[in-house]
Image 1 (cartoon, rainbow, N blue to C red):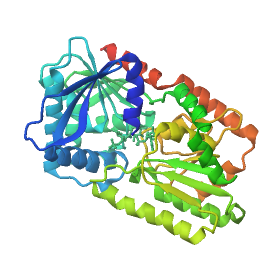
Image 2 (spheres, rainbow, N blue to C red):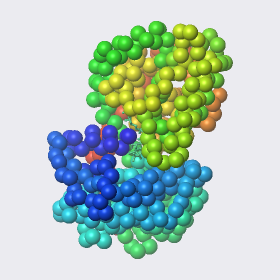
Image 3 (cartoon, protein in one colour):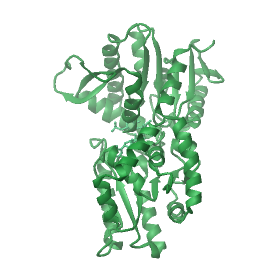
Image 4 (cartoon, helix red, strand yellow):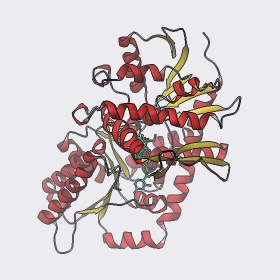
Length: 439
Ligand SMILES: O=P(O)(O)OC[C@H]1O[C@H](O[C@H]2O[C@H](CO)[C@@H](O)[C@H](O)[C@H]2O)[C@H](O)[C@@H](O)[C@@H]1O
Ligand SMILES: O=c1ccn([C@@H]2O[C@H](COP(=O)(O)OP(=O)(O)O)[C@@H](O)[C@H]2O)c(=O)[nH]1
């Protein structure tokens, strides 16, 4: 996912110690010592987790409570006290393991909703270092957030950091609204003071990509053999591309509906356009994700069955991960990047799509207004992802847009992404973390 891709790019130049889960499950009650290895400038310290930990902490509280609630999906949140305790227990376990590795003066930067209580646990373990937190996903408005039974503990945990960063100013506003309503803290400008007298900085730090590198990769990929074969297979048809983890937040079913509506209403486009949806499996142990697997495959199959012809398959659906070298070339080959999440912290695919385009003949980005990326990418055609007809209309606009307008829209977005790349994001956050806020 986007988090690992962004952090690899950020740390590759700067160096540092990256601690996290190894991706392995252990049957032992007490996991083995941390596995330490170094690649380039990054030292990795990885720990296994037990099956119970994974079920309660990762598949449970993180991905069945925090994820849906932060994506405004109260209807999908499945809260259980046992899982909530597992979430706090595993955070304590991570903190104990990390505390022994941190040296005086180190900055500690914690990422994402799986690790909100880490700072409080690190403080309990005696750490006095500066601690920062960045949330990669949205923060919902108070009425949504307060539906979560342990909302007060989660808010208090965030107040243990020195800097808390969000993707957009809307997320910041929502978070400040929660703090205000809970009476836990008051704020002046970007500085929060808790009722216990502790200060923390809260701000929006929109994440970037490695723009220049992605652009070069796409140009190289476009002339590679697999991409030439892919281009030939299109036989001159326009390509629309979507790439998202199989996640209910990504709006994939609404998007397929919109494509179907587009080709049904614009009959002259039948046989002239191909929609490629790349969707790697994600979090398959969580029931809502497992169910989606079948729904999307059936939906794509039905559209192809009803509208396909002997020599035209309207939707090509790939249900596994495609590596960046190919993905970047596919973005560049396409006429439209279709990115329509119902809610998304940022959405790096949208930024990658822009970075991958050729200056001479850029494709058009159709982007959900509810992705964090929409706050920055003004040259995209913005859509409401719930408005199937609106997306269909945007597809038509994108496919008929003049070269002049496409270039103008692309230029402003690309320049922005060059300046606000992942290194910029990393330095911006860490600079703020280094400096204590004025009291
Ligand atoms: O590790 P997984 O459970 O397979 O999930 C992958 C990642 O998904 C989420 O990504 C978020 O971070 C992106 C980069 O900031 C952002 O563009 C996107 O909008 C977010 O959804 C999740 O937050 C990560 O923790 C996961 O690793
Ligand atoms: O088949 C795929 C699909 C996606 N991605 C990458 O996965 C990341 C997805 O990040 P995004 O912020 O769009 O969403 P997330 O999955 O983190 O919610 C992007 O870098 C994509 O290029 C990939 O490498 N192969």
